[in-house]
Image (cartoon, helix red, strand yellow):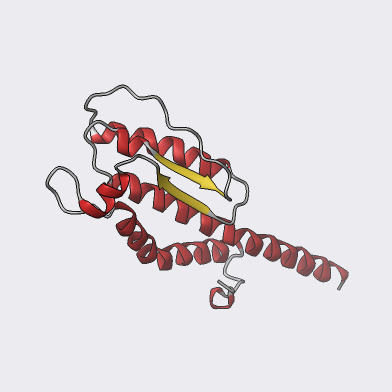
Length: 162
């Protein structure tokens, strides 16, 4: 009987750790999807707007913008560059409660709300938020499936409190 008790205690400890880590996994996955959406929805001409997106984690001061050469760059180059640096910052964070993605360029609000070069408003951040809201059920499903797989189906996913 002592062996079964030890196995049960080990299983419950593993459950506690896995469930405790789930909100952080959810936050990281959501942040990753937000960064992806913001960068992919950003218009690119010179690359200044897209390269000016910043990630702030739990209110720390954002890094200063990179010094950039003026000129036209391909959107795929800009997206790869920005995604790499922003995602690196999110993946390096061990725990966080709040992530903010912002753009401090003086014309960033115009791009968001008024448009740019005879286009309508891009609403980069608005659409990114809608993308995140739409993806939340699948993120939660993936985390539940991961937990269920980790426990070989012994953990009822409908009882997971998130």
